[in-house]
Amino acid sequence: MRLRSFALWFLALGAFLLPAAIQAAGAVKYGDALYEPRLRQPGKDVMWLPTPDAMVLQMLRAAKVTNRDIVYDLGAGDGKIAIAAARHFGARAVGIEYEPKMAALAQRNAKRAKVDHKVRIIQGDIFKEDFSSATVVTLYLLPDLNHQLRDTLLAMRPGTRIVSHQWHMGEWEPDQSIRGEESDAFLWIVPAQLDGRWALRDAQGLWQATIEITQRFQRTAGQITIGGVTRPLLGTFVNGPTLGFTFVAPDGSVQSLRADTDGKTINGTLRFVDNLTPISGARL
Image (cartoon, rainbow, N blue to C red; front, side):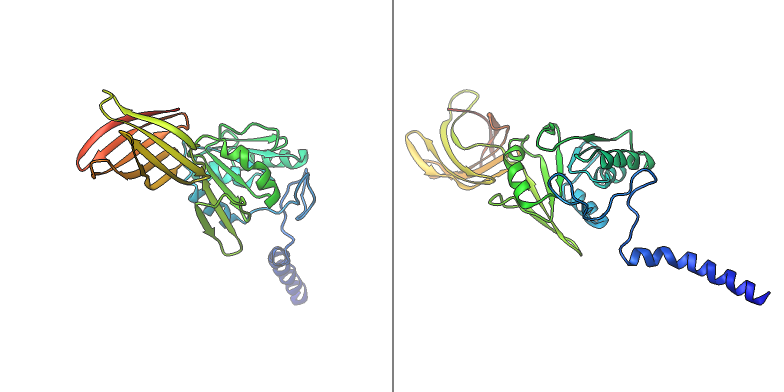
C-alpha cells in the first residue's frame, strides 16, 4: 500500500516537473493539433525564430502603439506580434506570412486569444502585399531583406513607425535603439521627403521666402533666401511629418519655423519673439 502510494506520488511529481524540464531544454510547444512549427525551420527568405515575448512588448511600446493604430507585422510567424498589438494595446493588426500552414496557425492563435475581430493574417509575400495603410510596421527579417524593403518603408506616410527586431536599415540610422535582455530592436519614424526648393509665404504675401533643403533620410540641412539675402538654416530637423528650423533674418532678428508637411505642402507658424505668423509653402 505504501509502495503504491509512493509510486502514485512519484508519477504525479514527474507530471508536474516534466513540462518545466521540457521548456528548460528548449522544446517549447509553439503550435496546435493541426500544425506545430519547428524552431529554425526554413521559410521563403528566413528561418523561423519567434521574437521573445518581452521584446515584442518593448517594440510595441517604443512605437507608442494605441487603439488608433493599424499595425502590420511583416513575416507574422505564429502571429504573436499582431496578437500582442491587439490584446495589449487595442490596435488593429495585420500579419503577412508566406507559409500557408503558419498563416493558418497564426489566425487560429488570434481566435484562441479572442482578438480575431482585430487581427487578420494574410497568407502572402511581404514584397507583393500592400501594407501602405499601416501606421506601425514591425519586422524580424535579415539585413539584406530590410535593405530591400527600405525604399518602400521610406515612401510610407510621414510619421509611420518602423520597428525591426535585431537588424538595422543600413545607412538609415534608427531614431531609437531598444535594449532587451536577449536581443535589441530599432525604431525609425518615416520622415517627410523634403529634399529640394520650396516657396514660403504668409496669407497676405507680406512675408515671402525660398528655402532649399538637402535631405538624407531624417538628416537635413539647408538655406533660406529672403529679399535676395541667403542665410543658412540652423537646427534643421524632420521628425515624421514635422519640419523645424531657425534662421537669422536679413535684419538680424532670430526667427524660427515649425510646420506640418506631407512632402507636398508645408503649413506652420513663423515665430519671432512672441509674434506668430501662419505660413504655407509649396514646392518649386
